[in-house]
Every structure is written in C-alpha cells, then in structure tokens.
Image (tube, rainbow, N blue to C red; front, side):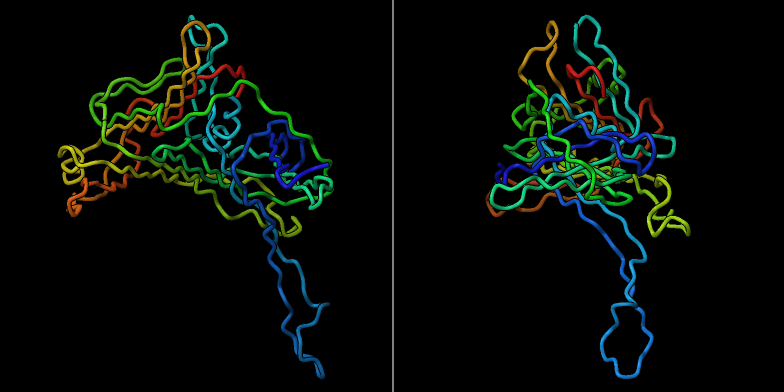
Length: 342
C-alpha cells in the first residue's frame, strides 16, 4: 500500500547512451518536473466532405523528454548530481583523516557529458501500486545552487533525455544513512582578497570575509547542442549532446556597509568568491563535512546603492563568472564527505 507521498527518483550513469541500467542512487528530492516532450505533426491536405483534421494524418515526428530535479544539498550521496552537472570529478582521500574524502567537481573539457538512466516512481491514488517512468539517455544541461536566507542549501538540475519508457521494472529505493543537511547558518562567504583555489585534497583558502551577504545563487549552463535528431533514429536524438561555450552567472544580496562592492562594480575589478558550508558532525579524526563553491574570477554587474526609505539599504548584485586563466577551473565545487566513491 502507498500514499501520495511515496514518490521516488532514482538514477545511475549509463554505459551506452540511451540503454537502460538499473538505478541505484535515490535522492530525497524536493520536487521534479520530468516529462515527455513530443512533437506531433498534422497533415494539411484537404479532402472533400471533411472539415476536421484527420486522425490518420497525425504523426509523431520527433520526441525527447526531460525536466528539473530539485534537491537539498547533503553531505552524502550528492556526488551523482555534481558529476552529472560538471562532467569532471575526482575523489581523493584526505590526509590524516581516515574514511574522509574530498570530491572535486569542475567543468569537463572533453565531450560528451555522461548520460544517465533516471526513473521516477509515482503512486496511484487510493494506495495503489507505484508506476515507474524511466528516462533514458538523460544528460544534465544546467544547474543552479541557491543559499537563501534562513534556509537549506538547494540544487536544481535540468535534464534532457532521449526518451521515456513505462515498461522498465520499478527499482525500489534505498537511501543513504548518516547524511547531514547543509544550511544557511553553516555558511561563510569570502569575496575578493587573495584566494587559493581548492586542490584535490585541500579546500580553498584566503580572501576577504564578507559579513553582509544575505543570500546567494550561482548557475552553470553546459549549453548543450540541440542536434542529433537525424534520419534513422526514429525521431529521437541518436547521440549524446555535445557541450558548447558554458555560461555561469550568479547573484548576491548585500547590506550596504562599505563601498567595496560598489567600487568593484564601477571599476570592473576581478574578484574571487568562495562560499563554504561547514556541517557540525565530526568525521575522520577532526574533519567536518564541507560543501564549497569557488569562483576565482567574477565581474559584478550591478547595482548602485539606492535609498531604502529609512530601511537598511541593500544591493542586489548580479555577477558573471569568467575564465581568468588562473590556477584551477573557472568554477569548482568541493565536497568533504565519507562517501568513498562519486
């Protein structure tokens, strides 16, 4: 028996694009919008005595699938999403911390992105069976990290899949144990100053602590191509998509306590930004679970401070992430975890 709460998402990296594998990673997701995306074409030929489009001239000319998955960021089981988003991932044992690993995720410089089988299970009304819908050849097109004031840190990933099947057997979910949520109260942010990027086994360090940031978002878009729908593929994409010139941008809201960000905007000063969330639990000898986002070169795009009518003056500041050709990748996500594998 089920309830309407018994929805599940499972995913696993594919060996062959569009060939189903049995999903074995099951996040506790917030919401999803995975759907079938068909293109129907209706014949336009006229026929004496017929005033409606005819059923025998309606065809399914093209199809794909996909949508979004929104998850809360946790200290275990997160790697599958980060690897899917960025494409490049390494896991390294942290020195002198038994059972602790640092996973480092950076944008891939090699085509193609990994593809995944994603299966969602949706229960029927009245306590009925869970119905599986399996998305094959799913590639993560983009993702957005958000750290809202007094909230849990979240990641929304967007996916494009080759097709959806309903005859793949349902894989009952099994969940990780011992994970810890990353949330606003654990966060710290540095903007500007001299910052050292993360390495395989060490987190980013240095910089100037910013104490007036209320919230933060950063998005990364792989800019995958829309081709591969060729003759012989049955109206489906016949190959993995390839990546284009990626786009990364973000936004912070800051209380106006000094002119540092204002002047950096006016002068287009390159700034490094590091956002770090440190959980409370001790792992290994003395380590803590950590989620860190490092952007070595951002340029601010607004705004100048405005009167708040007597309230605290705040700046809503957009920024673009650029490749300054400095050490490390133009965007890095590091995760300190007890997960032994990505």
